[in-house]
Image (cartoon, rainbow, N blue to C red; front, side):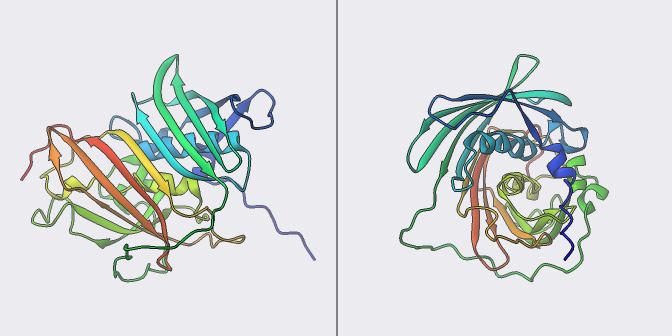
Length: 290
């Protein structure tokens, strides 16, 4: 029987890859690790690289620091200090505490000695407990069979959108349906078929058009100040996940004040399982509000 050909890294895996500097060590409290990475040019969103793209890169460094497949990402909080340029960045991680079931880490991304982002994260082994939920997946049409990437990019969206598939299902059309709530969503995946995992989910939490664009007359820069992702399931969920699976991503904003707005995101699998929740604070710069 012929051996299965290994899946070659796609654009997302290549452009979010991190490389450990120095030998790997057994994870323990206080362990400090340094990683190098390269900010690619095709993930721009306005004035700099897309925040979710950087989140995926940072999460990869944290996952390699934990180095335990049983300890899954559960919480990731990033404060973005400045936008990096294309090119090399360094990521320093610290295992602040390695407990029997929970690992708490911090990380710092720098470029040319300048701070780019500060991070706190928690990883946990599996737990058994009560299952209680008052969240229901929106009743939307299933994902289309066809996988057409880059539709947003062709419509004038930032360059990073060339790397995603989006099938609109929730809310109106940005800049046009201004009577609609600040709510938007749809089926989302990467342009290249690839199983859903934690770095991809972290990216998707920030990949939709900002929800306030439902009420503005034109686009405007909307840099993320901070982003927190709560992973509700270990990812990938299956030993042999479907690389063509799309997830349903929904974001909503309730208040824009002094330019700052919060954006809540929910991500579901096609079977209705909640995969992640996130909240970010972002800044809407110079938009006309209707």
